[in-house]
Figure (tube, rainbow, N blue to C red):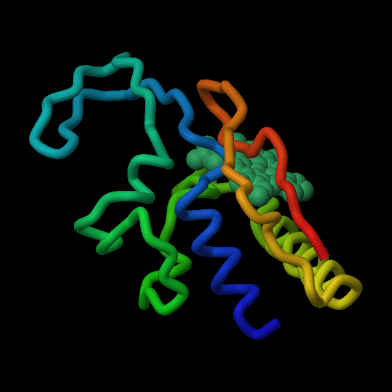
Length: 132
Ligand code: HEM
C-alpha cells in the first residue's frame, strides 16, 4: 500500500491519459531554439515530454524511486494545470487500496499483452485482464 502514491505517479508519467493538447502562441516567442511566430498552432505532447530522457533516465522503465517522480506533465502545467489533479490522485489511491484489500492476490493474467485504444489524444487500455 505504501507504494501506491509513487506507482500512481509513474503510471501517470509513463502512460499519461492525455497524450497532448493544442495551444496557439499569443506572441512571437522561442522554444528550444526554434522561433515561433504569434498565432502558431502547437501540439504539446505531454506524453512525449514525460519520456524525455534528459528529465527521466530510462524513461520507458517503471522506477518508483525517481527523485522527480511527481514532476511529470500528465496534468498539464501552468495557468491551465488540471484543477482536478488532487481529486484524481485520491480516486486512484482509494480505488487501488480497495482493490488490493478485497483481492490481495490480484495479478495480471498470464500472457496478457496490453493493447491501447486508437486515439489521437487519449491513451488508455482496450482491456485489462487480471486473475485472483
Ligand atoms: C487521471 C485523471 C486526470 C487527468 C490525467 C487530467 C488531465 C488534465 C489535463 C492534461 C488538463 C489540461 C491542462 C492544460 O491545459 O495545461 C486538464 C484540465 C482540466 N481538468 Fe483534468 N485530469 C484528470 C482528472 C480531472 C478531474 C477528476 C477533474 C475534476 C474533478 C478535472 C478537471 C479539469 C478541468 C476543469 C480542466 C480545465 C482547466 C483549465 O483549462 O483551466 N480533471 N486535466
